[in-house]
Image 1: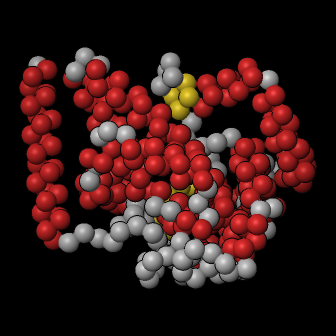
Image 2: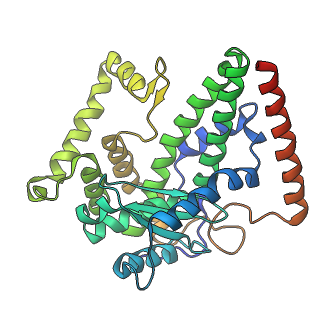
Image 3: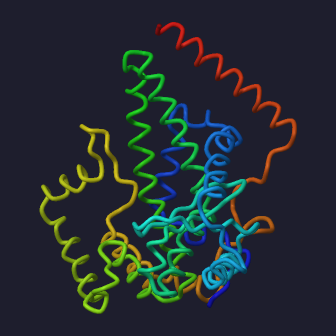
Length: 322
């Protein structure tokens, strides 16, 4: 399998992901989410939960899966190695979380549905999120959104005016970030069919009738889906399916057929061929993850002060609302 030593995430980041992230970060109030504050209230509790309620994968625990994982970590040049968990859940899914202590969770349903090549592409996809720094951005955004919602309730809904724009921007970026992670899956798999088969199984895979599922037909379905845009009304429906503004329900991932369309286009691009030949943008420093390292003691002290100040503000708002 190919190895991309020293590669920066900017080498494969999808332009839509980059554009949406810039929009999200430019919104008023987003940067108030301090990195360590997010770690204390989101990252650590989730890590503790999976340490207590999932299986940590290692050399003597799901060794075949661990070997695939180690190879992907090496090939995408990620350091330090994230922790890998397998969680007992029948729905085929996986997700990455954390940045100071990154980890990946694979639902047990994936192990029964995917071949090793397909499972490798799923692992590579989640490592792509960590490589791009998506996990910390997701946690920061969720914290800001929940804070905006809380303030909105205490200000007779006025805060929701700000929060609604933030929510929309967040989910728009979140969906686009999946396109970058899909590229990481293709780079490490070096086989677009295995990546697309994994996507097809996530859309409607069956272990029992797997031999009756056709990837070629699924690709043709994605082409028919794309043709729906010829009707302007269908474009409106697509937008509303992604963003149910009336009920405040937003999809966090693009439709799988859309992801296949984007991935096939990139697989035929000169950019992809150049990366495959070793011509790619490198990280500025050692290691692989393009995010800042841990903060020092003085920053931690400042963070504690910010947390205490924020708690006082929340307490004051609560008292005023009583």
